[in-house]
Image (cartoon, rainbow, N blue to C red; front, side, top):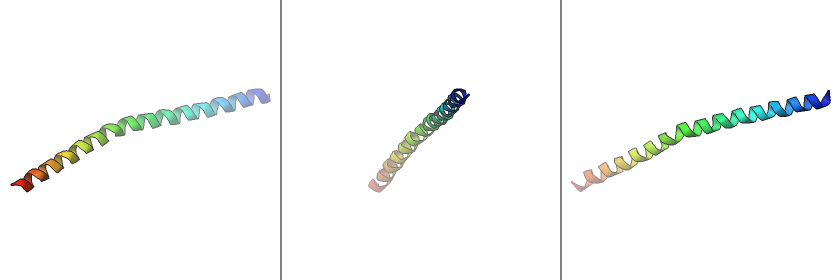
Length: 55
């Protein structure tokens, strides 16, 4: 009986770890494009500011 309970606990823990890992990877994939886009916007704002200062 103890062996079955131990197996169930290990399987349950592994399932929880897999679910947390899945959501972590999913959240990173969602946030990466936003960071890249924000960097491009920041660079464009700097270029616009430099062009305004030249005139």
